[in-house]
Image 1 (cartoon, rainbow, N blue to C red):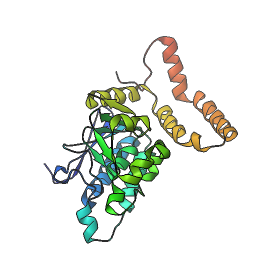
Image 2: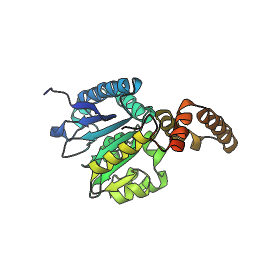
Image 3: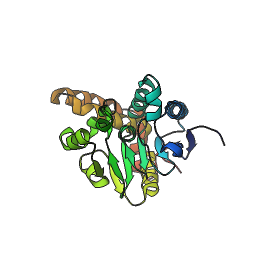
Image 4: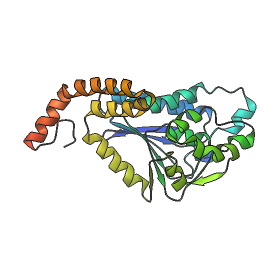
Length: 254
């Protein structure tokens, strides 16, 4: 055992990053965010040599993440750069990122899960963006949150700090899956990701982020070029040969 507040383990093509600071409900302390970035270093190294096809961010009970560590924020000058870095790395990773949430999330914890491509939450959970109640705004986390969720639908939650449930979070686009068994759903998603070719999955993640920001004709032109490149790639040749020969392509697990 170590005194790390974030652990990382790699197996079956998945880097599982676990927040482990239950005493303060996995609050975003300096140590936890430092350890989170160190865990992302390990995951990114695995991506580089092909052993990691997905990143899962999970936690020990009782909470996913309570947001900023307010005790630290009261006693020292703020430095949000490491947190911004972690959110960017989850959003920009070459592989899909999945938040596996079985405990409540508040404030910055919602930003952390919203930075992942897929967000799987337990059906009975609640969430709240409580920043205004302590005199601040959900500034940094608004970047990932408002890239996936409707600002008008979240206005009341942001302006009042009111609690909302998992079904509402899914309705506004903040989460992707509301389930009774988070672990089983995450396992199935990771297995599905591994069925796709690594480059095809990476390009799909990228276009999900970039196409909505483009003008229509720009989007068509960029995606036409991407389609031509991918259809001419070794992965496409292997995939189509495997389809014709009724066998799994080389990138799929045995």
